[in-house]
Amino acid sequence: MATPRPRNAAKTRADILAAARRRFATDGYEPTTLRAIAADVGVDAALVSRYFGSKEDLFATATEFKIELPDLDGAKSNDIPDMLLPRYFAVWEDDDTFLALLRAAGTSRVAAETINETLATNVAPALQSVTPDNDSVRIALTDAFVIGLAMTRSVLANPPIANLSREELSRWAGPVFQQLLVGPPPPS
Image 1 (cartoon, rainbow, N blue to C red):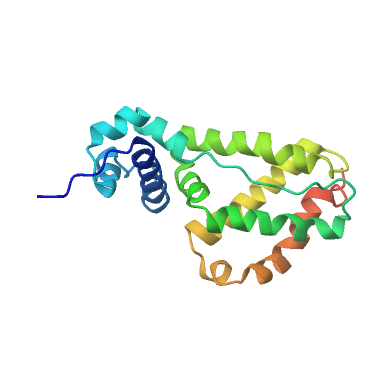
Image 2: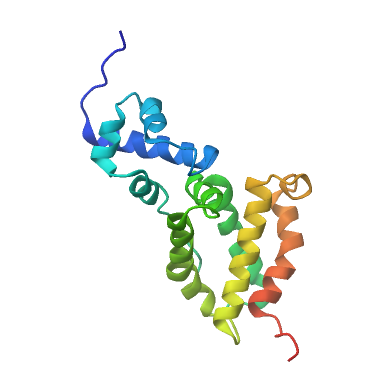
């Protein structure tokens, strides 16, 4: 007979969130079940539902994240990639939360909305201070480029990209990132 889990609601809730993040990051949204998350923690699936409601609600809570960007006011355009890319790498490579969102965004409306909301509220205001024109287009293209890199490197694990060190990837991606965000606009 299994040892009963001590009663500690805060710890149990935190353990469920940690298990959900791991499951969503490794398995994706669709294959992950409340029952599997509960089993990982050693609780009943009804307790997961009691704390978080539906799978969609648990996913939304488990995948809340922020990206902390530096103040870019007065930054030189050549310095911007070096100021920002390490922050992005930390989110996609060191945080299961973003990886879970990225894996699920293609099939889950909640995941896609969470990414879009985070980009709009956390990323866009920081980037807007350096864009010389066409703010929304430049920021959206920069977001698309970064998400594409993250997907290729962390989800698809495409060897030429996945095997680059962060410094090597920064050297390759930095000029593109800089062009999209602060470079001259394309000719009309």
